[in-house]
Image 1 (cartoon, helix red, strand yellow):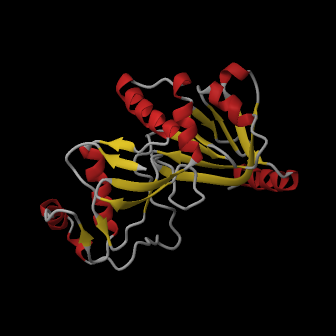
Image 2 (cartoon, one colour):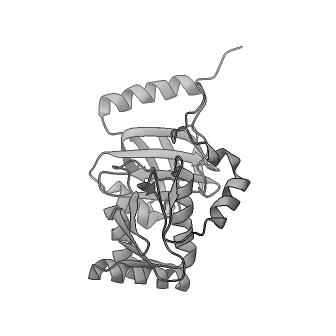
Image 3 (cartoon, helix red, strand yellow):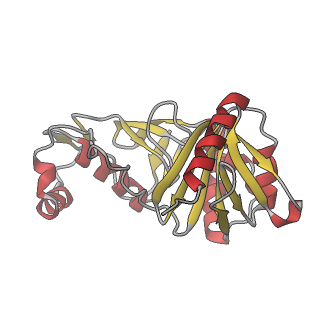
Length: 256
């Protein structure tokens, strides 16, 4: 549960259940890692379902390297979750939840007070929100997915398993290597991912744009462990052999 701690109060709309994800690579499906589902049930209380992987990060806060201000915020959340108490939100966080109610509403907003000036300002800035026919966005046939807002620049490998997920910043990629062959400085995180016995899915991003994805994969380290080299390949050996043949054909020099 979330509860306002300042002057701002929660509103509700005719489409009150919201879904969000704090991770830049996260989706908002009910089975997506990192998803948070929420619905205001009173001006001073919101009912929320929080993904267990989010809770695990709060529990591992003592071992994490985060700046003092962020650590203090995370500690307050962790203490509230442990005690079974509502997580207190400042006015900025409450305003963000209220904006989400507006952007997903069809026609109506409901508030305990007759103060919708902020909503009118937002509609003046984004007139398209005045008439929302669908919350589904479709891409163009033949084109890839749009870039992920908030994804760090550079090369990033997103790894998602049955019970957890992570982002591996990459220093370089071996374009001629098997599968996705790359090097990372995050060797401790790499060791944990490589030891995961579950079926993994991986997505390779460059400057927010997805370059490649792979399902039913595994992570293998090779070379000097301190160097951080690894490859993401198909777990099934027959599929791995098939993709290796495809890669070999792709990399074969073209005779002119």
